Amino acid sequence: MKIQYFFRHPLVGPSIHRVFRTIITEISKTQETLIIDIQNKGSMPWDVVSNNLFILKKRKKNTIHHVTGHIHDVLMALIGVKTVLTIHDLVFLENVRNPIKYFYKWLFWLYLPVKIADEVVCISNKTKEAILKKMKIDKLTVIYNAIDPIFKHVAKPFNNIKPVVLHIGTGWNKNLERTIIALENIPCHLRIIGKLNDNQLKLLDNHKIDFSNQCNLTDENIKDEYIKCDIVNFPSEYEGFGMPVIEGHKTGRVVVTSKIEPIIEVSANAVAYVDPNNIESIRLAYLKVIEDTDYRNSLIDLGIENAKRFSVETIAKQYLDLYQNLSKK
Image (cartoon, rainbow, N blue to C red; front, top):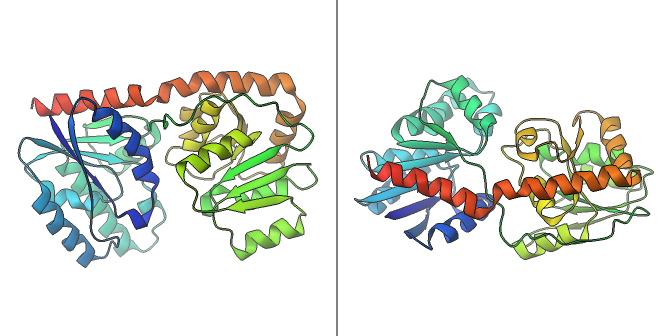
């Protein structure tokens, strides 16, 4: 069986490449695989036409074509061959206010791609439910993201005097601003991964937060950040999945995160939940995991067990089963 994986342009962001790289490595042990990055990183109509012409030249008979996410519109170049589409979330629709742009994205990024694809994979039940609210379709399968095997359990004594709080991501949904306010007067070091804007820097100064900041880390660097931290902080307002939760679990760190879907689905109650819109809720969660050793250790134990659900062997087998069933049709 041959599988071609189509990825968005690398400059758009490495997250989808990172999620699928380990899955493809596992599948490559038994199947022939090929990775193809599209040429244009934009999403304007001329980019869509150019990318579809590029994909049209790459399609092959007796091959499964897997569009791994974001570039849903290239499915138009794959009509007539066996295709799998993975949809991570519908944020591309939920953030659109202009009705013309909304219709354009609904048509070319959701409706037509889903209709064309032979199989559609959702990375969470939340994504599946969101799609079903937009259209009626009976070919949706939920397959979670896999955790990179570089993440392993590394025991570390918890620093309850001045714990390191690891916060990954500085975008609008990552809730860094409320994190900063909630941590005021709590002895800790806030380790922030991602580019800080002027408002975030001002908040850090105003609330006298001891922090450090790093950008553009390699996967190995990020793994080391988990190992060195005491608390993984992930109080997001919106997520399509929530990899830092299970990466924290796998490493053996206590996780503070939002009580929202799909994080509830992914975390399996092995976390300290917060209301992401409530600063006091976030603050109280920090204090409890720092001060209550039994509570903290119970969450760490539950998290280590939860991480097993996301092993690359488990997730790769689910994709292989999907491919094999599709190849027989």
